[in-house]
Structures are given as structure tokens and as C-alpha cells.
Amino acid sequence: MECEHFAAEVAPLLGGDVQYVGEANHERKLELLRGARALLNPICWPEPFGLVMLEALACGRPVLSYPVGAAPEIVTHGVTGFLCPDRAALVAAVDRLPELDRAACRREVAERFCTARMVAEHLALYEDLMRR
Image 1 (cartoon, rainbow, N blue to C red):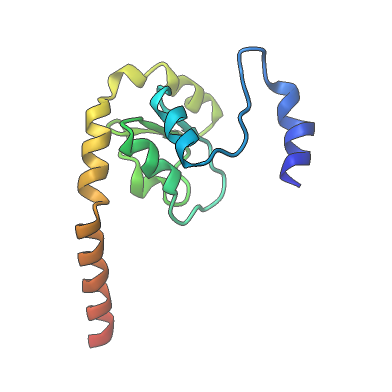
Image 2: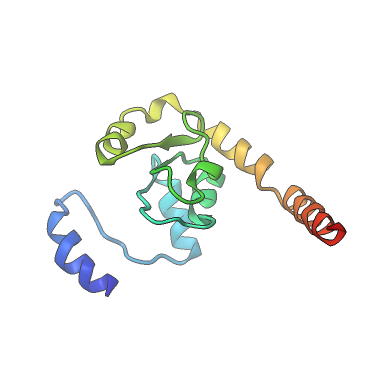
């Protein structure tokens, strides 16, 4: 269904300066992120976690997304990317990328989503649940 939708609805809209690469393995994804100015992530459903956003931030790439699902928990608007209310704002945010510091993207994801912090917070949550 996704391939059919892409072929019918998306592909005809792509200009000659756009290259569709399809699904990328881990190595290819890192290569693409290294060469990117940002991750354009126009999710329209309540994504529960959004690993791809963390991967982009870990590579020092800001994230442009809608404020849907986990995006507001991952992206700090105006610091690590822009959370845009609609398509026009998402497009306009591309011109605002120079306002963002790539080192801040990397630093924030390392602080907020490091293994030690995530494990400690999960253990604290489980302990709290067990006490209840």
C-alpha cells in the first residue's frame, strides 16, 4: 500500500533535484544524515517514540516536524529543531536552520537520552509502580 501511494501520489510531485532513496540500512542512514542540513519529519500520526529523530539529533542534525506524537518530547522548538503547525511553516523553517546550533542538537540528545539516564528513570518508574 505504501509503495502504491508513493508511486501514485508522491513520485509525480518530485522535481529533478530530488532523489528518492527508499528504505536505508543503518550505515546508509548515517551517511545520509551526515550530508543533511536537517531531518524533515512531517509525521501526521501519534508516533509513540520517534527513533529517527533521536538518530538525526545524535548526528547533530536539527529536526523539522509537526508537534504530533513524541516529537514535542524529543525536539526542543528553536533549539534542536522546529515544531511547525502546518506545511507552510515546515517549509519556512528550512530557511531558519542557520539559527540552530548542531552541537546543541548532539549535546541535548546525549544528555536527555543517554543509557544511564533512561535506565535510571525506568527503574524509578518501576519502583514507584511496585510501591503502589
